[in-house]
Length: 127
Image (cartoon, rainbow, N blue to C red; front, top):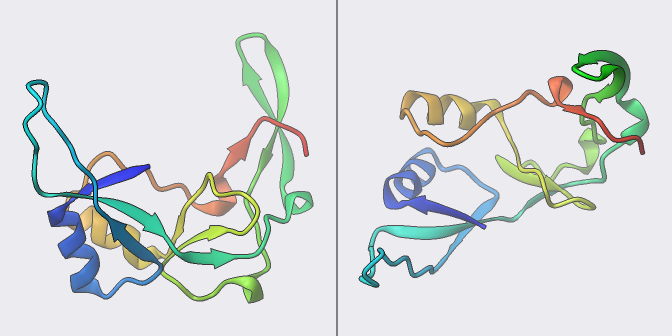
């Protein structure tokens, strides 16, 4: 669940970004008073499944020794619906964005978000 401030909603709308929608949320402070100005963010854009075999195995040094990690999250570009925000069809744990979204967030100094290029993403589990 992602909750965003109205200022982020305005940013998304002003740039005309696609692949997202909002839903109502109720946020309360410790005293139970409602805090206005927030919405839930859902991602509607999609691409196909992750192509796990395209990831490259590389050794990484950890405190317990050297272990492999797999670098890269890849999908068939023809499976992408062209949205600015999108998620893989099979695994909804990640949200992908186009470079323009990243730049807009950085220019607006939006905090509490991390961008990792898909070819730099590392995972420690084998598929």
